[in-house]
Image (tube, rainbow over all chains, first blue to last red; front, side, top):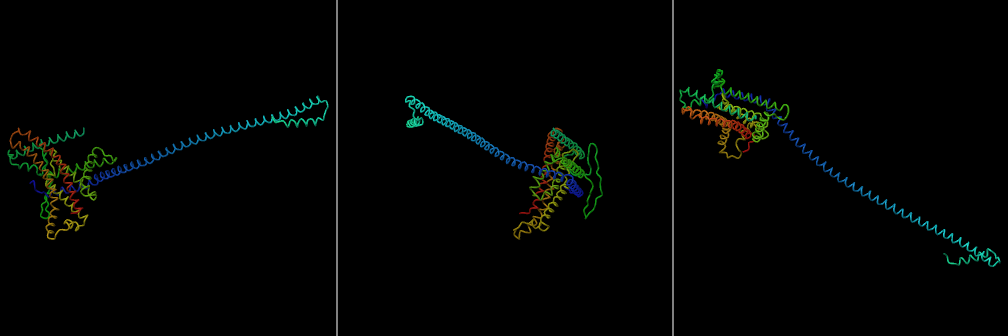
Length: 162
Length: 301
């Protein structure tokens, strides 16, 4: 009884299983398996995208770091250049002022010299005239003024200068 | 919270089942004129019948169809207890699977129920079928999933009061094994051609004198595999049933209530074991079918 095969039950089971398979295949297993596949695919893609984004971020970060270093370098260079320029300007101004001062001093010196020469020559004339007048008075005998002047001048010229 | 409720409700169901068994046993022993030592009543109770008993609420006599005679065989298509239980199990599988499938309609993130079903579906797909058959088995996934859930739900009917596991019927398991047999052979024939498949059964480089013996062994092997599937499922399920009845029957064999606590706690223990067996046997039937299909597809010896 327990170990008897009942063909009716065998057929019913086969029919039931077949129908169950057909119904489930189209209404349950396909949607579930498709959903699982889609989800796995989307998870895989998400991970890949995240990986890619990470790589990109790394590249951007590297670039930023490089840019920052470049900027730093350029700033340093600019500061250095500015400092050099200022230095040069300062030294230029100083040397120019020096030169000007020197030229002013030179000019002043020349003028003084010229004035001195002029004073000396005027003094020469005055002295000669005074000498002549004195001699006239002394000698009361007038000699040719021009000749006298010449004599005195010759004498003065024979004197050492200054 | 939900798990607690589930455990509580399943425990009360198991207790109710044991109670039902006790009353069944009492009735059976009474019908045998109080003689419980003869175990026939156990066999009677475990076997298929044409009535659904809802004692003490009455019983339903299932309709009889006139037997059909085909090629000398008498086929009685009358509905039996196990056929009805099988239909209920199939209906529950459909409800469960469709509820799970609906969970994916709105979004790819499943709900609670769909998540539980998905766990089993993923297990069958990734741990059972694909490792055994390779990528070629992907197309056969609906078959294996249906097989697993149908056997699992059928097995669980053993634990429901008034229920009876269709898988504790040899005809049921024989039918599933027969389907498995055809699935195995057809998948082999599809991949290797009709003659290629049967030629591939015999390993290469076999000495000529051994050929006939090997051919017989291999062809016998084709039939023994599904036969083992059939008997394994049937024997495991029916053994649990018989063990429970036997423990309860002890009360009547000894004729004393004093043994009842022991007998009932043993029966409850077996019922708990049956939960495990229900899952394990469904798993074994599925994985072995998958392995045999894999062997038919990949014929390397």
